Amino acid sequence: MAAFIIMVLILWLVVTVIGFVFKGLLWLAIIGMLLLIGTGAFELVRRTTTRR
Image (cartoon, rainbow, N blue to C red; front, top):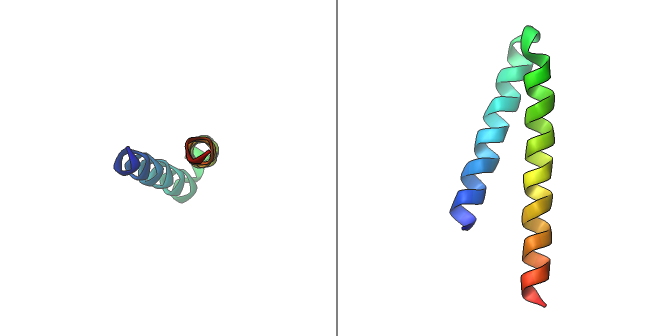
């Protein structure tokens, strides 16, 4: 599962970079950042709840 989360985080990071490189795709960068933050937060919450 950790490998999948890392792969998804890398995918969102690539989408964000592509969105910033092409100025017409700024919306793609914003979506990429939101998904990157959301996936990271999901993984953080999942790890803290399974350790208890």
